[in-house]
Structures are given as C-alpha cells and as structure tokens.
Length: 162
Image 1 (cartoon, rainbow, N blue to C red):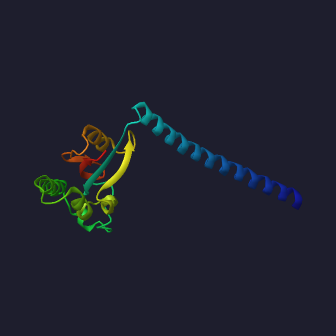
Image 2 (image 1 turned 30 degrees about the horizontal axis):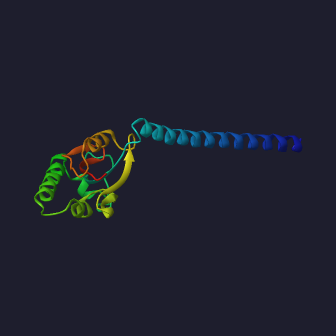
Image 3 (image 1 turned 45 degrees about the horizontal axis):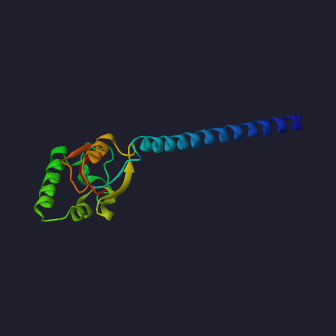
C-alpha cells in the first residue's frame, strides 16, 4: 500500500512539473512573439526608428505617482494637471529663449529616470512607446521640440534627436 501511495505521489509531482514547464514555456513563447511582432512592425515602417529626449512632469492623474526625485510621490500627488502643464510651458519658454538647454532642464526637473541622461530615451521604433508619445515624436523633425504631449505617465515636452 505504501508503495502504491509513493508512486501516485511521484506521478502527481511529475505531472505538476510538466504543467509548470509548459506554462513557463507558454509565457516565454508569448514574450518571444511580442518581440518578434515589434521587430516586424518596425520593419513594416521601413525599419523606422527615432531617437528622442523628453521632460516629463507627473501629476495627480499620472499612472505612477512616484519618481526618482519624489520617491514617495508627495509632490506628484499634490500637483494638478494644469500646474504640470504650466511648469512645462515655463521650461519650454526658457529653452526657446536660450536661458537654459533642454538637457539641463530635463536633468534637473524631469520625473523620468532618463533625467540622468539629459532626458535621452535612446532609439525606439513603432509600437514601443505610448501612442500619443510615439505619434508626436515621429511627427517631429530632427532637432525640433514638441508642444505639450499627454500620456498616462504625465505631460511631456519631446525633442527629437535622430
């Protein structure tokens, strides 16, 4: 009787292992599929990639209410959308007037961790960023700065660099 129980328990364990292996493989397969899809999407658009920097200001409606400079989100939770937009407009005016560079302002004030790189997000293709951000970036000429762009992350000013 003990032997029969032992074999049944071993069979159940083996069955569980196979199930786990299958679900891991399915998750890996889905991940591979998404990467392949993103590559194919990029190649459908002529392999189009852009490079951009941005300044992000988060506010009470942002999806993640914390940042490198406000880890507990105290400031973000108390910032209205209108206040965030006003801050960006003032920064934009300083950049346009030459009082400050885009990179300097991004380094000091952006809520994105890309601040440590002057706002540089690196290169990206279609389907890799939130849609409003992607659309705005691809619509810019190299060296051009966007107006205010709103995403689930907050409000941004984008500068296309490539």
